[in-house]
Length: 466
Image 1 (cartoon, rainbow, N blue to C red):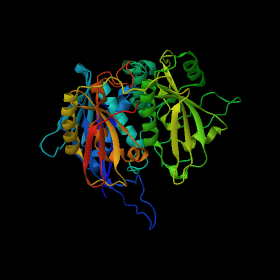
Image 2: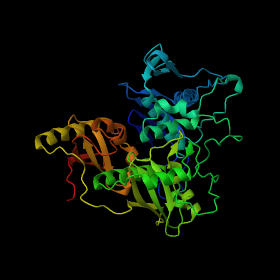
Image 3: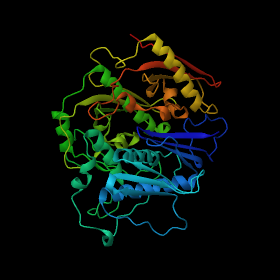
Image 4: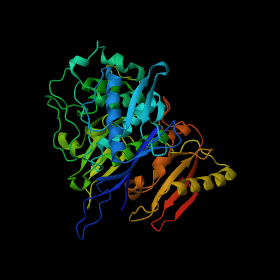
């Protein structure tokens, strides 16, 4: 069976296809997310291009390595010479100084005798960096591929500027700080005597825990992706920032949090006991901090994806007036694997909506045909799942899929085997823009989309519960 994995950002989507060399023993249930060990095809969909960059394992390894090295050079302003290799790289990145762009060049393209290049702005570059970072954090996909960057020798170092000045051009509020934090994963830190560990196996036991004398209110568990906020910074945010109480915005943030946890929580079958946390989330979906409640042990978070998802910073300042949402996140032990329940800390106060909606029946009928055709053209019907997958799919008046929501747990688990993540363009509805949060800013038409196990597709208008 072909395994398909997707890592999506507004300006970039990585699609990997291949199969697993591991086998399932007799009498055991199929792995709901099998290990992808052999890559047969890799696609990189970039916002400026109509056609994706396509290649095999060599192309993908060069893409991961070249983007990682370039991100390090761009943020640190220190050249990072590549060691001598047996074969030339297929992917190159270089700065276009006069236009403040980043040129990605693919050599030996299949349909051309010369190289293909695309110019990316900084936001588009960081989306590419984050998509690659999502892959590197996914222990179920090509675990043998990793990034091994070392601190650069002083021989190559130029006059240094403070890190805050080097990252200032891309620090555009809370959302952009999160992007910069991901890219900062590739920057070497001269003051650290021991290099941080590279990407390890999914079941690594190397963790960091708090050693303070008092019980901290928020646990900023260190991760290799950046510098976590200090206790003082987090407490300042939680005590001074306004709280998000609008039920519609809370629901969209809750859904974003649920998706991120589902996508990053591996080894659920090894989960033991119940772990309960109060989690603070920004308007852009970034997890600012969390603390255990109701007797949950301090080290219990290592069984959850919370430390991996924790927001990290690259500048010395953080906006304390950004509104935050508070959620209760309960990781529970199930019969077969762990499950997670997420709800607003103080509940919903008011009626939840889907945001501005398109209600004109003629427009809805026209969009229904567009949605159906768009999904059929991109749907790989050979994908296998144990039951029908049902989603709410939101579409702009122009027919662009801007949002989707899984209706049940199985649909969450198998959502990456559908084309919805690849087709989704949140920016078309004003989702995720600076200062707008996750609630759509433009009216959307909503549809119920069912991917049936027999290869059929059902699309009908979605009617929310009153």
